[in-house]
Image (cartoon, rainbow, N blue to C red):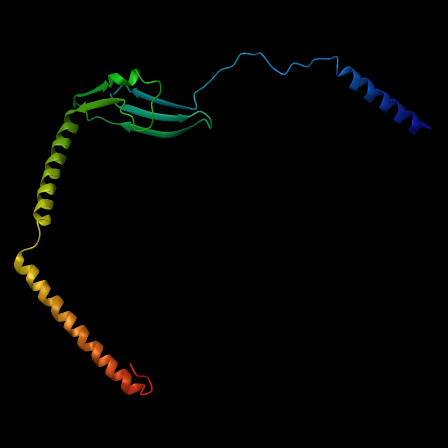
Length: 170
């Protein structure tokens, strides 16, 4: 008897909830204040002793994905200039030039590297001009002799093969 009463009460309760659900409106939006962070955040800052710190922070995982320090030698005059067109863009992409660093030691290294590059280009031109005609003729003669040797060895191979297998006629 208790079981029947329990089933009747639960059924009545389910019908009442079903009927009331048509009259009760549940809001599906929530109004609150929040703080929005960018997906990735890039920071370029200068320390007290003149070093530049480059940091790329991934806010989705709350970790630093890239970190580098550009250290300048004491007494080395250096300047950092922001590129003027960077402010007209709505976003900065990877590989974009944000600014330029000018340093005396970097300028000296750049001049050294440009000199080495010019030397290597001249060496490339020297070696790319081609071989001497005598060397080319010598290599052609070696190639002709090798082809004659190949032809001779093929003939010897065919003779030996006929002797070894007389039933086969090649």
